[in-house]
Length: 317
Image 1 (cartoon, helix red, strand yellow):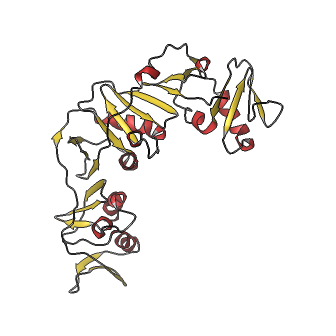
Image 2 (cartoon, rainbow, N blue to C red):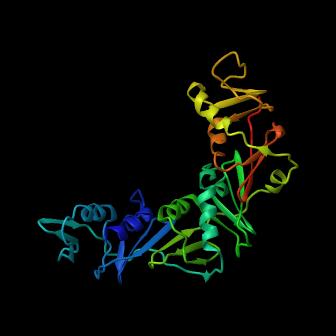
Image 3 (spheres, helix red, strand yellow):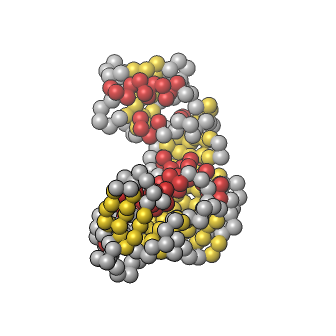
């Protein structure tokens, strides 16, 4: 029972703007949650019909050490009893807006979708002024993500049947669930992922009107192997950076200051490019970028990896 409740916990609203959004809906052997953006549902071994407050119910089940009994009281509350422990959970009794799966069943490679979101998740933006970047775009044969410093394209291996932009909150839940779905439903405004045990995740979709990124990714480049000594250097000098967290590259060294006679310096023998970048942004390329063309600076540096390509924007000095 606790597993089912925790599966749905990510769909519970943090604030009680609408009471229904902070409550589970339990009926017909399922438990559901809906926070206005995401709905989650899971089978549950319970034949009660009620809408209990979600977080207190989870805490109650966590406290149960023996067999659990659930029943409704005459006052309309859900009673949770286990051995000598008993607690009453408040319920609401009006009709609630808990969402259901809808739309056509898509024919697609569910593992490719899961692999794409796993790879691109660290690169999703959080800029409220660019809401289209707060998710992963599926278009054609690729999936895309950008934090407005790094742009990345992941090749799916086949044409995705629709164009859609999955929000970060849903991506977090997909990765928390941790396995590819077995079936996908779609409408122009929402997506539902179905899982083998009968559980499902439904999410609203973001605007998919992205800017033209082909002009960046299709630029000419001459990439070379990414020197992993750079990542060692970033970790070494990062404690000595100012609040901007920038790194300056000169021939054979990287430093925290434009003048290498100040701050911290890490020597990288044979490094033959110059530029200035955000340290946290460069560190996101670890494990992604196999090759890169740093010589394009101050234009975006193009990089390539397993089933992906991208660009990172430097800092003009």
